[in-house]
Image (cartoon, rainbow, N blue to C red):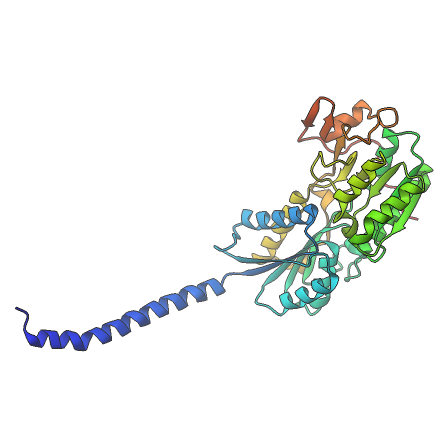
Length: 367
């Protein structure tokens, strides 16, 4: 039998033990939360849910992980999406800059601009990608000197070869004389693409039928207007507004048997006749690696604004099986077929992983 004195001792000791156990558990939980807060914190902002920007963000996160910055383990990553709303993008940018972040990654020109404005004092390091022409974004870059930039802001431009794209269109259809294009003049990167497109068409003797739009809801009507004016093909530039509606653009043009070509490679068999541009998973990957370098101590002041093409060559997707690619008007020479990373024809889909852009394709000067 246990003496009553032992029971009395236990009654006195249990509350104390419980208190000590609770305090220990609380300290352990606090330590874990503190350790989690001590992880580098990264925000990622994209302008819309297009495949191009989604791929760029996936690549960014993969590039960070490749260098050891894994979400939830060695870093915390929070993603934001403005869903095509510039006012929302600006509000999110302010939230990010005022939040508990060490670095922000942006995917798209509008996202770059929103964060650059909110972060003008340089509280956060900022890496951008999926930006066609950063030098026209109005955020403090100098086209003549890539080392001239805000000391906290660096990244990659990914301007697709516009003149090359029109040269390919002309090779596929030597009689091509009118091309329609919808574009949003409020987007700085779109303005740059249009400068290059106008210069290329002038050089090649192609009439460019333009249809300005303010938002994605006006894209289809704009495309239809160019078709009614005699467009023999539709060009999709690097325009965030138009890209967000690219599937509808393809479907609308197909109803009139008008092919679509772009500088935004997507799913090879989505319906465009051809695309010339970059793999945006790879575009995001190099940006993620750069972000990891900054987190590891690289001073962004020493890093120039870079061009994606210097590290990742553009490639061609060629879909000769699309309904609008009427063989009496559109035919691909054998050398162009060999340059296509993805080729779809009557025999099916062929992938040539190492194929890159080649040939006598030079950029026409902007007018």
